[in-house]
Amino acid sequence: MADSEANPPAPVRLWGGRFESGPADALARLSVSVQFDWRLAQYDLLASAAHARVLHKAGLLADTELARMLGALEELGRACRDGRFRPSASDEDVHTALERGLLEQVGALGGKLRAGRSRNDQVATDLRLYLRDHARLITARLVELEQALLGQAERHLSTPAAGLTHLQHAQPVLLAHHLLAHVQAFSRDSGRLRDWDKRAAVSPLGAGALAGSSLAIDPEAVAAELGFESAAENSMDAVSDRDFAAEFCFAAALLGVHLSRLGEEVVLWSSHEFGWAEIDDAYATGSSIMPQKKNPDVAELARGKAGRLIGDLTALLTTLKGLPLTYNRDLQEDKEPVFDAVDTLLVVLPAMAGLVGSLRFHAERMAATAAAGHALATELAELLVRRGTPFREAHEVVGHLVVWCQVHDCELADVGDADLAKVSPLLTPDVREVLTIEGALAARASRGGTAPVRVGEQLGRARLAVEEQAAWAAG
Ligand code: ARG
Image 1 (cartoon, rainbow, N blue to C red):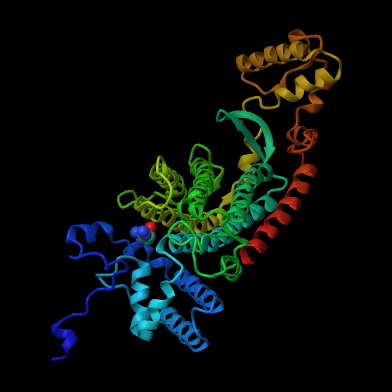
Image 2: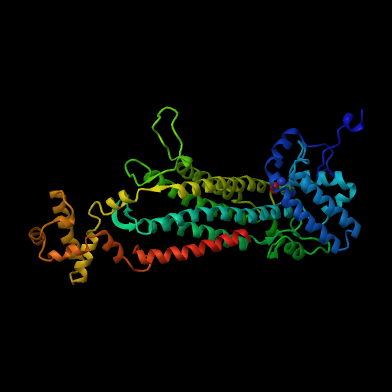
């Protein structure tokens, strides 16, 4: 029997020297994070390669040592990717597991990589690298949703819809205008991730445990190699700051909230009561008991997942609250919320893009109800204003006309000349000219308004903005 089988090798521990006993099982079970931080492995290896190069530049690794080290890190990266190297039950975290992997390949040389860095600056670096990558992935998926909305807007550039406030008919709008309102919100979400990325582009490596290093390593060189804009200005801040994670979670949570608002609208639109849109079979679910059912689960899950995303942000902020500088082990709790936020968005966004892209709007039905509920009343009031009537009085007059219509169960445009005059002498027969949906839409031509000409321009600008977002995500 080989020696190693009789006596399994002692687990790799990064801090065993001053301890007489090994950790209690209960401590080890509480402490272990490799089950979730393993997803940082590739980023940790990248940072390790960059660190090896600065150790070499500082004269702390010979040429041959550097070459062996980089070769081993690359091989370890491959082994991680194809599953040949996995964390073991005794690896405390991703850093411990990868050090074991390195030691298995290059023996004592592997131990040289620890010089001048600590898990404190390492883990902060890994998480920034991970999030900067994933901010781009999320943006790419968000762009697909925006493109789905843009496609629908393009198709419905002349479809009138009821514009709602308080969920009550207010004024007619173009369906495209409504859809583009969601694009505006999503564009800001995308912009938020991009702005966030500028602040996140600071490398903590070189901060060591908290105070920097006495070795001649060059943090700016590491930063540049890892695609950061600069190295951290303050080593204590570098290892204790998790603003970047919290801010990322906020951007994710707000995006989640925007997704939930769109989700809620799809739920409403696809209901029998609204009857505005039909969900494609591929994005609807059925009922196990009611054969006729077609349910908007994607939209509901988008709405529901917003709760998780808000929870992720809340959990992280609560962890950070009151922590003294610098690194505290509480900070290990920073990862699961951000991973959850990333995972959640990466499943919700493609489903929402598919749902929105394949929605079939019932354009005729929407047009037929676009002015329901006397939604053209404002047109009439504004016409009277253009003719010199104070708005207060115009509002009053048209209000009376609405009541007249309610009592007589008719539309504003159906009131005869004599009855108009009875309500008010201001209501001459020609006021009926403004009582068409097309007229009402065309009249709202102020910047940001729902007039077809403005919405067409808006669509063009939104397309350009979304293309820019796509380019950033791919860069
Ligand atoms: N797993 C730890 C974390 O995620 C790594 C840093 C540990 N540092 C320490 N001094 N115990 O935060």
